[in-house]
Length: 445
Image (cartoon, helix red, strand yellow):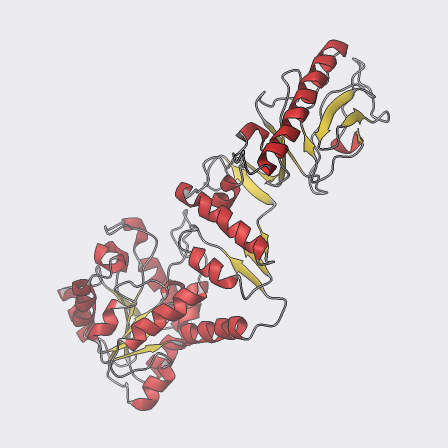
């Protein structure tokens, strides 16, 4: 986000004729007396609500705006505060009104916060004109108008004219990288534009961290979409040692690597770019870390059935006589062993061949220490397999029936083994450049 944030802030503040990109609210108040002046403040008040009570459940972002608001109020400015909430997509959504935010802000500053039902129009003009020195007016959700995200010039002009503001303070670090009407568009219709305390602090901190980094440097990047973070991720390759990816964008990376992600958020068209980024990280010696565990749930609703599941898998081709309990007869994934979760089990007799590891043609057998059940079978954990399966091993199959299924299974896997090495030979030859079928692209994650 840093590169986009800094460039967007510079572009927005640079468009104001009387203010440099580095000017802050302190500089503004030092250059003029703001008492009685109407100041438009763009904050990031996009906070979560408790679905049961409708109250703000986390006021961190509201508290983050307090230093700037207090600084202006103490100097007698009339503050017109604006923000977005959620993604109403250019239409009024009653569940995304800012009234609960106003209530929480009132309790934090100990003074009334006036509200209106829109962010432009006659009602806003009347409410702004009624403000006394040090008062605060909170406009309604900016994104109830499509012109906000479209950076519509007329909408930006209406915000300034309706509020009567000629001074603008941007303190919305979380949205400063977006050229929206309330972040970039309004700067064309005011006399001065400056950064608030939060925005100034975050930019200075990140610029120092990236421009003069203390090694090793780790970047943690989250969010819903890969598409909006890709330029930032690529710009970080030359600066950091490790990139940790989190948030919804993780699932685009996992899907690109062949993992099943269910109904999780996916930017299907970005999968190739996600793989390209993985390759660039490897080429630049940058470690790219993806989550090894996720919470799997039936829905996102509170109290929905859920469990923690590993997402680092080895891919296994399975012959139909395998007897994994309650698992489909299609391709199977087995998670790497983790101390926090019990390893999967399967039924097989001790001493019987249960699989073949490609690349070395090593047979896997069930450890004799596995306890037999009433039917003479065993239920061993994966560590009971001898030799142990390594992280880079490719298990071509697992079987557990009698002698006949095992013989046929062994022959089947032996053929797969030959095809596996044939594929490697053909891929190594420049005369036969082709990609192997998905069923043979079997590798450790």
